[in-house]
Amino acid sequence: MKRLLAIVPAVVFAGLMVAFVIGLGRDPSILPSMLIDKPLPVFDLPPVRAADTKGLASTDFRGEPALLNVFGSWCVTCRVEHPFLMQLKAQGVPIHGLDWKDQPGAGEAWLVRYGDPYQLAGDDPVGRTVIDLGVTGAPETFVVDRQGRVRYRHVGAITPEVWSKTLAPLMTKLKAES
Amino acid sequence: MRRALILAALLAALAGPAAAVTPDEQLADPALETRARVLSRELRCVVCQNQSIDESDAPLAHDLRVLLRERLAAGDSDDQAKAYLVDRYGSYVLLRPAFGPDTLLLWLGPLAVLALGGMGVAIYLRGRAVARPDQLAADRLDPDEEARVAALLNSDEAS
Image (cartoon, rainbow over all chains, first blue to last red; front, top):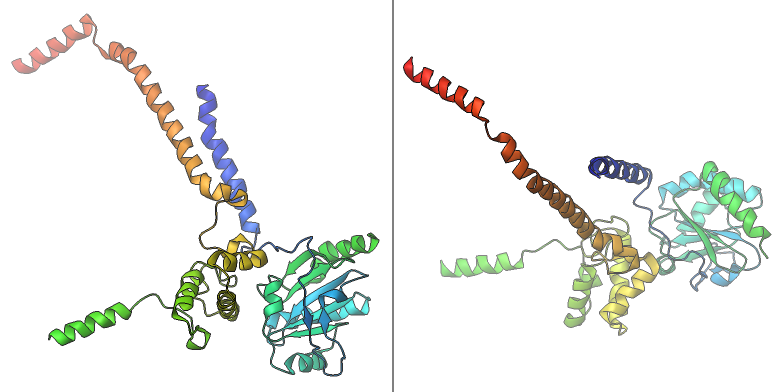
């Protein structure tokens, strides 16, 4: 009994160490999404591109799995992420854009200047839809399945590593779902 | 002199924690505005995380303050307005987390640590109490040792 008690502090210490090491690897600014496995909140946004007849609505996420990418012309990390989104577009990945709190015309000018990776693009100048999505910063990307349910949320830029390790396998899985 | 003191007291009464609320965000109804201020002090800014949306200058905090006031103006109760944000950002937005299954560890963790520590102390003290009678018997000098002590003390006096 006594010997058992003597190792208790060592066990507690080891447990704390494990908890701290796991904590070190976590980014505390990434909050869990409340939308996982839930349908997208209802929205119907005007187009970003003046020539478009329609913008982006939650009902557009039906039929095939797609990415919903929250961006803004003011967002530096979006600029970093952008070339890779262009690559994904070239691979045929459906990406829809949600322009967050941009000045009128700024989102479209950004797409004209750097290239346009989006099939549909909606403008959210007041940022209300973005709050409904529980977004904390741009860029953020949601993976939406055939039924319009959010299956995954990625905070920050999509890098080739994030794509190949997490998002691409998930998209393949969602495509296989009926 | 008296006037200066009153003025100083009035100015001191105005001092308080800095708030980021700008006049254009405020509601015309003072009662609603007061409720909004109290509520927004309890809601976490999801960008800066250790400030309330009342204190934060982040654009998203501004949007959330405006949204909160809209909800209150639309007739939401305080709890409904809070629930609206919790639905979107999770219970993390509450600076004073509610007691629930996901916050059980947060609320009961300190008590559990205290109980464990108390148990440790109790076991330690009990171990000491049990050891004491034997310890006392072992500490007592036997007759030989007493004789030697007496001899030593006497020799010391003689020198």
